[in-house]
Length: 82
Image (spheres, rainbow, N blue to C red):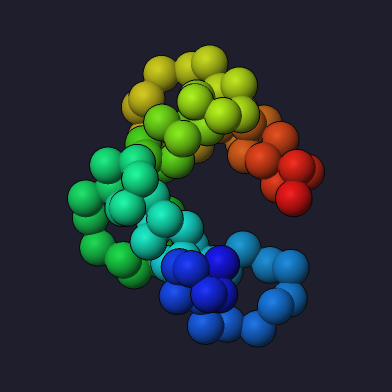
């Protein structure tokens, strides 16, 4: 994330603002994220994340911008794959 997506924070294992800014850079380039790069996980961030998770991490729910249990489970699959 640091080299490719502009992550500037400490490597601390936490999903903070800097982590989400880097994720938003990734989502903007590949997954139709069209909002601010601000590190805030709003509905547009979640929708882009859901599109990515649906393609690669078995997310089966709607692209609705709500980080429900299905979104969280798919994100955990991603995190556990690292």
